[in-house]
Image (tube, rainbow, N blue to C red):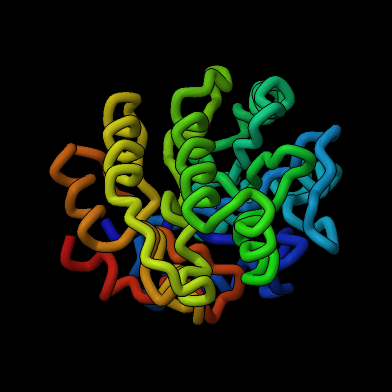
Length: 265
């Protein structure tokens, strides 16, 4: 089985207008047998998106069309490729109840899903951890250090693993070292080995899959996959199921770095 299970779509507010068909036909051409579309789920209704354009998640009014379109495409391409309907759901501390309600409402529509941390709760606001290097450095200054940002990220990530979000909680944890995205911008040598290993151990204990995500290799301030290869090997040694995800937001980025990141696993 050749699978890419973290793919965005034309329904992404901060993505590209590339069509579902462009993604699907490229996947078929590159001999992938299984793909999952995992658009950013709508954020909780009472949550204020801290990004400037407030475009981190889908508009909930578009969900029905998203599901309907994918059901049609699943049938249309069934002889050529297996297409799963998914979402990338944000874990936001303080919004667990709304997230559970959302999953209870739409979970039956999903074949697959990812749970990710993009937002961190600060003393007086929330921040999007992967929005920009400037925002990352501003947060580090506000809370005291780059190390403090890393600590807050891993604490939030570990809370996402143990949180009760109901029966439709996603079974895969997305890009669990996303906090590395701006590591070349801050330039500090942060030792997060213990935090990453603890996160993976929690994932193993609670039965989660790992999103082996190649997108960081294309980010100029990161230049590594999420998580780095030694931790993928550690996850494998723990028996955690490994699932490749290109995290493509354009058809051009679909399956990016697959051979480097996953083909040998």
